[in-house]
Image 1 (cartoon, one colour):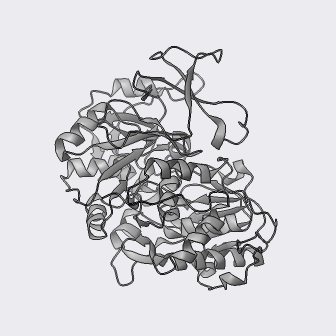
Image 2 (image 1 turned 90 degrees about the vertical axis):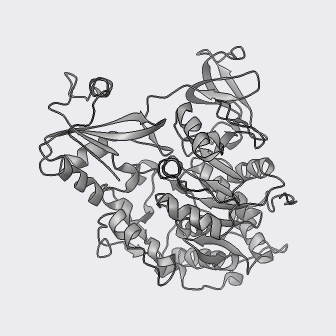
Image 3 (image 1 turned 90 degrees about the horizontal axis):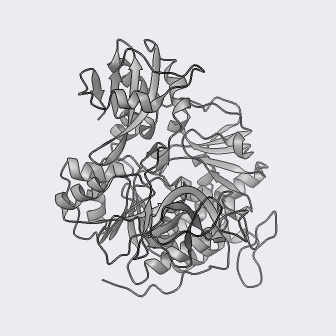
Length: 506
């Protein structure tokens, strides 16, 4: 059923100010369910104010990196950082805060198992802190995530929950005569948010226009460190909707049960969720009207499998590797047509040759996007570096990439390989990617006599999205004279492998 949602409030304000306005009008309404536990608009805003106050008291004044999974603390942190007038770097797994000049880090504890970097202060998120009371989450939080290092004794490490439950008085913060919030340190009404995105509010406005007329109660399982996922989340919140948030690797059965119980009408999912729906024959609640999968790598074969298994169509889209959000999405009233959607309102796309000239309709070239959301691209189109073409109907088609994109994340295999070589019994290892059932999976090619041992190592030390789905024992890893892994040769050699010596991940 369509509803008249109206305009997104506060589009000329900062993210925090816009949310504060919605919060004032909907204080007792549930903003986020986390694994079924309700958090109202008042709760989210109060926690953001408390966190901002405490960070200011601690002297936090520089860029803050966020390396976190799906949890309300992610959203609370982003709002708090924005209210302080600071910048946030949303980092993919494996990215270093130091590369973005971030001295401060907000991180999920389970993401710290395999990477080391320098920081001034780290604020640890434990998902349990805002999870339902009295609920057994052992499978997800302990067994599924593996070991979590105890970092609490390290200098400069703090629990984020200690800073958000202070209940600092939100109305004590400085306000302007027109009753909007003013950033304490910068005194600016417009505050920076994301260092890889020019204007998150424009991205929210574009998506709000695309979804105009529909109730915005969303189940979100796609990772929040993707800009497109945040775009969906804040589109719901800025329209006084409700977000049904689940960890990005929660099992599909639980996710769909929560979607039905809480009457979500949209799902923003990843390939992990949709693969489970097909393979485990999980029913999709009747309340769900639209299914979205943005920025994922897939083959058309998977869309055919999904439609055959469920009778439903997934709306797909193109985003900019977590830097500016969705720029194309399938039209709501159309079936999957082989494209990755049409440009959102206020987004323009052109296809150019190497000299920067427009190519003819249907011709392959470089995808360029209008500069509205890109830092440093105010006066010209932004060349994404991806190849594609636009069909006669205006749909964008993306050339298959050779990069490792799993569940929407660009995977850098080298840090994984370096960490894995520290496991006893591993003589050499290479991480590759191949397609199974139309979706990409990570594959570990290992020189070892104990394939199951390396599988246990990954399960205990790596977050779920960096664990291979297949483990194949090989005699030798092909390398160049310079010692570089020749991945294409490795994958080609073992493409017909019947997994005689492989262990399949759950």
